[in-house]
Length: 408
Image (tube, rainbow, N blue to C red; front, side):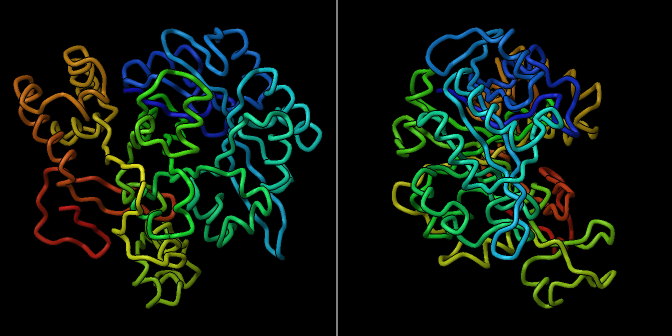
């Protein structure tokens, strides 16, 4: 079994940790149990220099550093006008070689400043970007990123589209996969029949080493660029085994709301307020669940034939933090985390594979928490307007507030 997280960022991206360097992310990937990472940010000249200096080619499209394999990837922000509206779409690009990366970068540097940000903002359409990338190499792979995020995505409430064809036109046939993002999971996407033809992948979009692998993909094949891309494109269930997902309620745009007013509303509640914040009277930030309901033509819970399965996941440090009553960044949590890693091998092994009985022998309460996560017996207060949702694994509340969702 291989774990792959294709969408991350380097320290050259805005609001990103200085620890997002090759050495640190490789070390953390091994602790997490990630076999393949995307490099992220290959459009940034300084990061590209570091990648070429540090990464050793293993096979076509596959590179290695410190025992971790890498695919060359980058996220690009397209901001442009179409249909009388400003569109803001983020696109994840895979490239099979540094030679192809340089071809892509030469073309993109004619459009915008690639030095300005690890995720460059370019004044070209998603369709134009796809054309440039595919002309550099037909073996590039294009994936619309976190497709439901309100501000920067394919279906985003504020700057996206209602269907893929409107965005990519005749190049829609070259789009084979979509990234679900933290605030949605495959089950939510299955409610749209026009998405059935696309594979759904999940990645961390990590801006710090701690968040690597918070979402990921599972494969059963050799580490090979062409084989893995083909497995995704063709939804080969014997090779593309599934995705590892945030509980979508934990994503910071799952529900509607206003951060400044501490207002979090379900789509139904938002409609009753005519999309207006009851606190300040301004328009609410419309979240992912709301947009899914707007575009869905099926009930949530429908599973299409041939759909790739998924597993829901909570970071191990969050489980430990709730057990010991500390934040996930505390020294006590860190100590217990690395103790468990030493015992069992990696975070993904602990959260997904190691028998609960074995973990129980080491720490009964953590074992109970992990069992609850695996069985989806947790509660999550949904995220909204940039505020992450809050997971509760043990606390039994006497009253569940309207914005909370029980997963029992």
